[in-house]
Image (cartoon, rainbow, N blue to C red):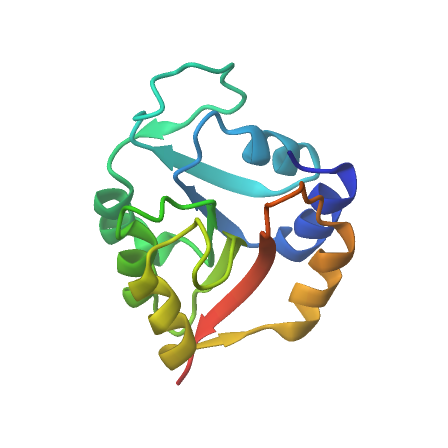
Length: 157
């Protein structure tokens, strides 16, 4: 679930940038961001089986494959709740250039999103944008037992 305030805060950050959302599922986040003027491309492999309403036209492809072919076309990569049993978040983060920003929605190390290798890479080679994280914390909706947050990360130089 995403609040109107979260969408507005993300849109303010993303407007004017070339945005790629990987693992976009039904495209609900992209749908709302586009309504607020964000130029966004979504990619998903369809493993969720189309069980929900589709909100945004999504490219059906392997996220890693698409990213490798097209990463120079984008400024910002969004990954929301990447699977902790899969290495996708780690592989994407490892291949980010110094020019990319990664917007990550999920839990911290030990949580249920992104694998441990991603979190170790985050600790070792990435920098958090503390101001962005604090702004997003104010508008993030949480449920009992869910400890997710929004983070903006960049590669250390």
